Structures are given as structure tokens and as C-alpha cells.
Amino acid sequence: MSDPTAVDKAEAEQTPPPTRRQRQAASIAEAASGRIGWMLLKIVLLAIVDAIALYAAFVLFTHHEWVVLALVVLVTVLVNYIYFSRKAVPAKYLTPGVIFLILFQVFTLLYTGYIGFTNYGTGHNGSKDQAVAALMRSAQERVEDSPVYPVTVVEQLGTLGLLVTDPDDGDVSVGTNDQPLADVDGATMDGGKATAVDGWTSLSFAQVLARSNEIEQLSVPFSDDPNDGAIRTPDGQNGYLYVSSLEYDEAAGTMTDTDSGTVYEDIGTGAFTSADGEELLPGWQITVGFDNFVRAVTDESIRGPLISVTIWTFVFALISVASTFFLGLLLALVFNNTRMRFRNGYRILLILPYAFPAFLSALVWAGMMNESFGFINQVIFGGASIPWLTDPVLAKVSVLIVNLWLGFPYMFLVCMGALQGIPEEVNEAGVMDGANPWQIFRQIKLPLLLVTVAPLLISSFAFNFNNFNLIYMLTNGGPRFDDVSIPVGHTDILISMVYKVAFTGQTRDYGLASAFTIIIFIVVAVISIISFRKTKALEELN
Image (cartoon, rainbow, N blue to C red; front, top):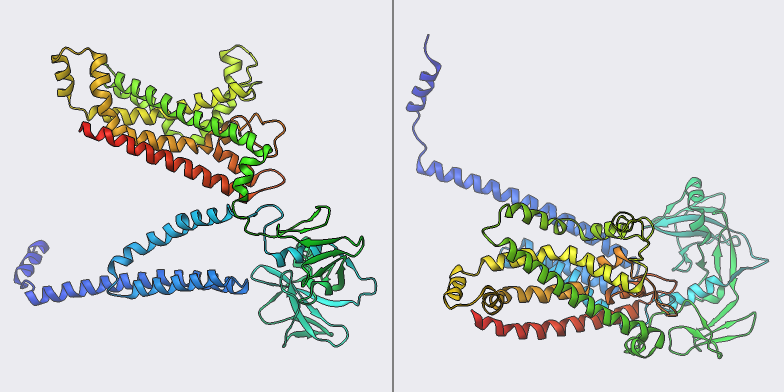
């Protein structure tokens, strides 16, 4: 019986090797297959992008956001041109990064700057038309002899509306909270009531019950004139005419309370204001120029805590940088000594705080420093009641201690790397010249070390200047100042103060918070520029 392996070898020896033309054809076929695969992948990805852009364009069109709609269409067309073009090869690599840079950096900075010059905040969130509609809606009362309008609750792109049938002539119209009733054709009728219309989804009885709270808030304007009232429905089946006790005069720019006769005028402050200074809220968003910046330094209830918070922010940032650097440098010098045993084990232990998330570590420290049942008071100090986080002075000390624990491993790693980068010949030359270890460190190693570390110290200052996580998780800015109009405390830094002005309390002032953000940006930028210029002198050491 013949050996199969021998037969295969014989057949392989008889098969002639592929010619050069065959190898080229195989290579071309393989390259073509690869190009087709990449082309299909590109088409799929662009189809996803175009689908998202199409949906966004449709939503923007329904909300009449023409500027943003034009930008979305322009960017989508540009992206398709770039990736289907054979010439724009560099742009194919740059486009994603540029888009994300503009979206998450440039736009954010410009929009924050714009908000800083407006009165945007609680009671001033939308346009004047939206404010008028909200005021009229808030003062609506049902007309006693209102006819009953058969209604069907409908939905379009997540927006609820009412499909209304006129009881007199049977005309059908549809509208939402923001869009007044508009006539529609081709509605599906059932017993003289419109039940469906193209472009809208009719809600079932079960869906109406499930969303009854939203439906009760529906107030569809009867016409473009807000004084004509609105249609509202308590049960999702029958609608009634509601008329506001406020009367709006667009020509005069006034809002009149028909019950009391009080006239509220638009005096340019973003709200209708009466003669005695009473404002009707909500108002609307307007540009106020530098009023937010002026208010930050002239309003006593803001200026007082702002000065205290600013001073503490500088103290916190400077002490944090200095303490973490010198402790990290000391440990780096100790563990850079080749005579020390188990150096690698010690190094691993020292960088453990750096390995844990900062916000989680701050929460752990907050529990350990609890006055009543914290580990530090109960175990280390034998049940003492030390107010680590509630006393103004101790709270600041606690913040600095925790930040030292969190920050020194980073400085330790940086200094360790910088010290190992200094040639050993430098140390030997100093010894040969008769210098002692302190002189070698202070006059030789430290200047060389600062060449590498100084830019990192500047960035560390900028980081601690805006170290929101530590303050928020450890003390939440407390203990709070007394008799101030903004909810800030003794350990708040500027960035946590901005957060509280913008997102906490009953009144949220985004304009003032954005003004503070611009001030912080200017301060950090100026300090960084000056510091980098000063550190250029260190470069001469190389």
C-alpha cells in the first residue's frame, strides 16, 4: 500500500509554480477585495452619519432652528464630499478631530462667553414669545359657557398635541403647547370626531391614562393672538376654551392684569415690570452687556463671599502644589538611593493613592473624618468629637490634608523620573569640588530638576485652582457662609462656587456663573503665561 504523504509530495513536485503574471493577478484580486471591503465599511459608516444628520435636521426643522439646521446640512455635505473624494486624503484624517474639537471645545467656550453677557437663568430661560405664552397659560381660567370641543390626543416626535374638531362646522385642526391650532385636511373621522391625521400618532385610551399629568398641562393656543385663549382637556376626550386673566398688548409691549388692573411694561430688563417694580415671571433672555461682571464686584451679597472664595482658592492651589511637590521630592530622594532595600515594594505602596479614583477617595476620607462616627475620631482619637468638616478652619485643613494624600504620588513619580534623568557625573563633580550633599542638591540637582518639573507645577496649579471633585465630594464647600445670597461656604473654591450659582438653590443664574467662569479663565491664563515666561530662564541650565 502506497504512502499518502509520498503521493502528495510527488503531486506537489509535478505541479508547476505560479507564473509572474498569475502572482500579479492574485495580488490585484486580493487588493481589489480589500478595497471593496473598505468601501462597503465607509458606505455603512457614512449612512449612519447621514441618518443621524437627517433625523437632527428634521427635528431642527420642526422647531424652526434655522441656523443650526443650516450648519448640520453644511457639515453633512462636507463630510460626504471629503470621504467620497479621492483627492482630499489629509482631510479624511483631520475631519473627525476637527469636528469634535469645534463641538466640545470651541463651541463650549464661545457659548459660555456668550451666556456671561446675558441674564440667562431661572425665570429668564427662553424668548419673549415663550414668556408671553407661559404667562398667559399660567393665568388661564375656563370660560363658563365654553362649547365642548371633541379632541384626540396626538403625538409627533415626542411632542404632545390636540387634534380638535369644531363642534359648529366640523373643521379639524391640530396644535401643541408651542404651535397654535392650524387647520388640517384628510383627518380620519369617527362619529363626527377626528381621531387620526397624517404625520401624527393618536394615543390610545391606555396611553392617555398613563400620561394624564402631561395631558392636563396641555394648553393649545386657539390662534396666533394669545388673548383668544387656549384649548385644554381634563380627560383627553373633551376640550374647553380657557382665557387668561392677563391681557397682552403686543404693540404697546404691556401685560395687563384684568382682575386688578395692574399694567406691567417691558422696560428692557427681560421681564414685564409694574410701576412699583414688581416683575412677572417667567421673563425672557436678553443681552445685558457687562452687568454680570459689574454685579459680581459691586453687589455686597456677592462681593463678600467672592473675595473670601478667591483668596481661599489661591491659598488652596498654592499650598497644594507646594506640599505635594516637596513631599513627593523628599520621597523621591529617599527612594532614589540605591542602598535602600525593597525600593520597588515601597514605590508601589506610595503610588496607591494615585491609582484610586479621586472622587472615591474623597468620599472615603469624608466618612473617616465624620465628627460622630468617623474612623479618625473613634479609633485614632479615642471617641473625640473633632469637627473636621464642620469647623471653618479645620475644614480647610482637612481639604489640604486629603489633597496632599491624593497629590503627592504624582509628584513622587515625576520627581523620581527627573532625578534619574540627571547624570551621576554631576553628583560626582560636586563631591570632587568639596560640596556637601545639601549644597549639591540645592545648587545643582534642584535647578536641573526644575527644568523638567516647572511646567508640570504650573499645570498642577491650574488643576488645583479648578479641583472641583475634591471640594464637592469631601465638604461640598461647607460650612456655609451666613447672610449671603448665593449658597457658598468656607471651603468653596471658585469653580465650586460657579457650580452652586448655576445649578443649586431656588434661583439659578447661568449668566452670573458664566461671568465667573470667564474671570477664572482669565486669571489662570494670566498666571500660566507669566509662569511659563519665568521658567524660560531655567532652560539656560541645559
